[in-house]
Image (cartoon, rainbow, N blue to C red):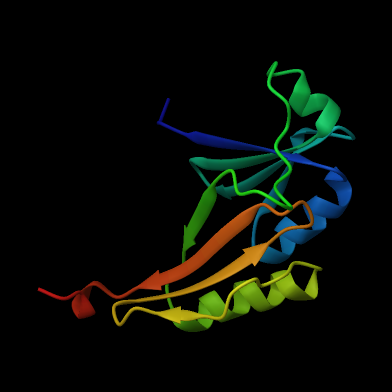
Length: 134
């Protein structure tokens, strides 16, 4: 089996969150989805589990962070072009996400930020290694 990563996020409304993440380009895997959680596929090896608070709590004894007022993690997705960065973020905004910062251009990397309904923060970026400073 290839190495895989599963990112688990606690969300208030798995259905609403599924629509948001679909707009970002994730695909739903119904085989591992039900009313309490949705398996969203980014690639062959990267999966996002959006779980109701009740379902998420069954995996931990710690309280769920309020990611609307605190940051728990910065999650990043690379894109093949600046146009794709803009398309993904604009689609996410159209699905109800918010963009807390303006686009940042570091010369070799362009980055936009989007938050989902629960405040989970995603950095959507394109990096051009040919422009990386020596």
